[in-house]
Length: 466
Image (cartoon, rainbow, N blue to C red; front, side, top):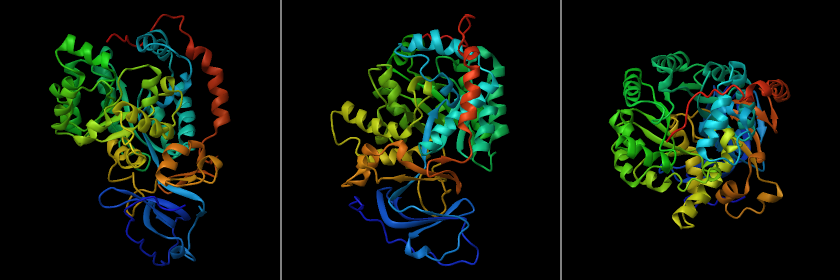
């Protein structure tokens, strides 16, 4: 493979021998790197040296010959990428995969998903999360942002399986102040746990299920406790039009007047963001980001998609996401990357947007910024946490390679990920999961499905009425 970058990154430094062995050396691969202007490039026949869960150096394969290491991975024929980040999902909802198909949004929520979610137990959430984490690890996802119920169970699975996550306990105003208080208690209790791999957020569900008063209180709590906010907003154009009719403001306008845009906020979807919303987002005093999950928008036949270029133009990072598997059917961020590029080309009417390089930038740097980890992950560079994946491009569907960025975005698949590493720990090696027992999870989850999916009780956790 040859680098397809026009601007070749600076020559890799040599790794100087040290007496203490490195924890891990990955050698012989092509490494995706970023220069000081965030431009993407590729270094061939390179090596990544990991010490104490941190990337110590990115150097040449020759420089690590003879360097002692506790573990070594020969990655010849593979590309090392920063671990992918799923910037908005509901991991336990893999248990509902394929349950609500070919339905408009209102029926999807009211007739199937919210009645079924009223049956959820903590064990259901744990099993769903185990299955979801296995799926994501196998697809090269090293970090995910989750927003759901019974999140203590989710945090326990993350700690055990070795992934990184931004977690929030979701709440509706219909739960009373106790819902908001539980969201805060969860965020404070789990912040920095799992050896620092878990970060937390306050998680009001959305402006259409949480009152202005609760949003304003949440914004104050976020500022007082230095916590981000993760919520759905302007998910589709219907929500925006209904919000204007009922409240005299778009969902983004509601976030501004309640102070949420003065916090660090991660907005899920945003396909209903209007041109008038852009100045509000541009002048937000907090760190504002949007997560886009295009597969679900196509399934629901929403008429608009996340305005990626307009958001980038005002400095709002757009991270890649899948949403939950109940709407998306998979947690494959690789697919989200390709679809984001294709949908933006179609929407813009311009094949030059998004380019493969721009898509990779959203999948790495911008996704890390979106979940508040821009200084921690998202790049393979000294000082960053050692979250990386190895992608095998020797298959017939990825050969020949004329443009490596295009091959990664439009030809490679999640099944081409061979190895997944988080904090220097190998979670999957040569497609073998090392931290999760999938057959046991599938067996128990299958036994629980009849009780979980029963809708004969007539209950639902909320009503979708936008």
